[in-house]
Image (cartoon, rainbow, N blue to C red):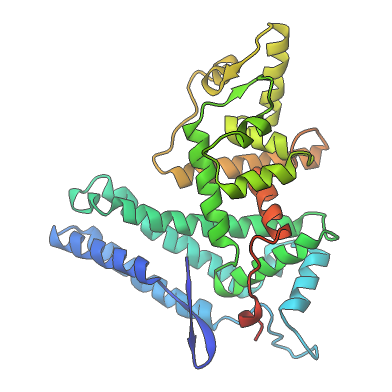
Length: 340
């Protein structure tokens, strides 16, 4: 996460939030206290991050016209451009977008290093939960940026939510934050927790969507999403991929076999065994990282289906959910403070 503070009446990015700085200072002191060589490594990375943050902050805003070729350039004109043309190659990305993304990744790696150390060094073990919280927040920032980029890049320029996705993407490029970030991150975390807490079954009289809607553990935002998306093409298939940790193609093979062998119900572990996967779905030590890896895998498969023109969800569940957030009135960010 990133804090924006006003300096001289203009918004400026702060390298670390107060909470991030507190966790970093505590970890460095603990590492120093036991004479660990990792203390100087972390300190050096922190100094490098501060230098990079200054460079990112000095980089021109994506909405700034350095050549003064237009009478007026603003967030709105850039939004229209992105909505109409999408994103093509990295050479077309604003410098601040590329530098800012690198800054977030570098900060993620610093907390990732501390997370690994907290599992081997007793001095950091008590700080593990705090370290992983900061790591997870940064991971969701990267994930949200990837989602906005994906939504703007696809052929949906006539959809109203594309305009909003472009708005969010530009805000992330400029300030490394997004109006929907907290809502998205919290909701995805909650669904991932429910996914591991329930025992999903394939082949019940009720479909996966109905089973999830009846689950008392689901937060209201997911119940609303499912109520409004139950008939949307691809959403149910994307939800099943998310819940079972299997691709649409694998689930189709399972259903065919279940029908041939007159099997009425199977759970997630049985499904894996029936597909010849001799191990149960792997459980990552870090739940947020497991979710991110799952998202990237499902996103890649969705892109492949678009290229091949084959059946199955053309988006990940996270994409469908962000589209829902952008299209609903649950949260309307204020962009005015960025349009300077």
